[in-house]
Length: 230
Length: 230
DNA sequence: GTAATACTATGATAATTATCAGCTTTTAAG
DNA sequence: CTTAAAAGCTGATAATTATCATAGTATTAC
Image (cartoon, rainbow over all chains, first blue to last red; front, side):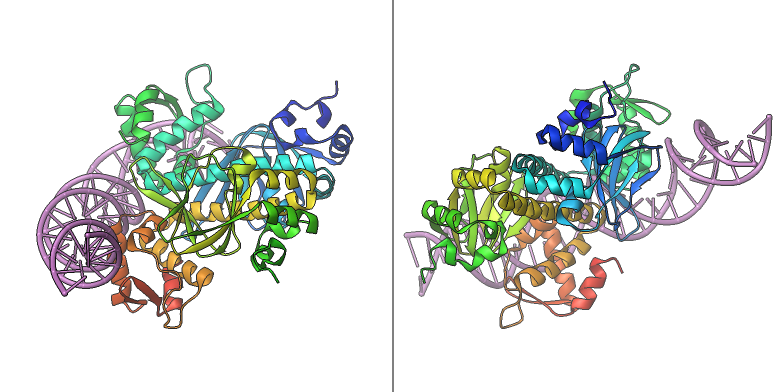
């Protein structure tokens, strides 16, 4: 079986592409190009015009936006099965976010036309994309509330739990996705030093353990309570 | 002309309902019910299962979410032409937000079935809804960045400019939409006292003028600069 | 292997923001 | 109309968070 064909790609099960017909999938597969992106390399930049979407086969990308004060706010982490750039392609606007790989990635680039055609011809596909976007919007609302109402300490606890739930742990009990301290700070929207200080504090309190930049969760229950304000 | 019919409703031009066919519009119009909602009254509550969507004909509603610490975070203000609750109906989930009128409102309730049928049968409509949601998602990203990276002072300045741009001013040079100090605080995610203090400061600096709870913008340029961090 | 560079860490201090308390003004109910 | 309740306001203080400075520790390039 040729795994480089979308028809055989497992990743597809997780995103809206699963609503495509066999015919359509073949077209997607014929028009797509596969890229590998090294950790730290950009996929696209804020303000760039996207000529297609990126489907993540492996690895993780951060989607971020530069704020007026020069800091990068990470809005979302996209991993296996997620499609990046669809918002811009659908609304026919330039991207409002930058995408940079936080681990080595393998992605498929699907040209805009292929997507647009299916959006116009296959209502099931459109509906599926719509459902996914509705879900993303709900998550965005939750992030807004967390950012506005929780303290930095709570947000960092929340972030660690999120990383564990979404990316899992490696064999040694560390979070499978290792982010730099700066990236952690940019996820929760705080100064790098503040994030580091709080990580040290969590370590002292026995909530987490660290080894270099790797972080492992030691007491999930207490972290949860902290994130919820108890 | 019977303005109570969707076919003749101007409001429709502003939202995704404009993509409906004449036939569909008639069905919508026949199945809808019109409600008036007094300022302060709820349209629906967080966690409630919505059996349809609300199309705003007049007035403004706040969409908010209760945070763990008991504060209400206002995520969006919906006014004439906007459709509320579509996210929940599309994703078939309970509402993640509460809607409460911040001014007297007139809204049309359109049952879920009517919407679902059109979503399945009319790809243009689905695509139009999708475009709107893509836009909402972009705005949500912007809010996340503002909430995470800007100071309370900047966020309040931003909020006043937003209110002016989206709801305009009355004849006396005050913002057409009057929010309580508490609502303003809940929009920017701060304590009511902090919001009041900053409003007083803006007044002293000649950026705004007030009369009771009404607020007018005096120096838009300086407010803009402040919001952008200069 | 070593120098340069980026990342992590911690202290000191300043700025921002929340909280609590008390008071005044406005609004709404009877 | 008047009285209770709600909303607005201000001060004092505490807690949180940012900033600046400095140093140790990894990483990477040559």
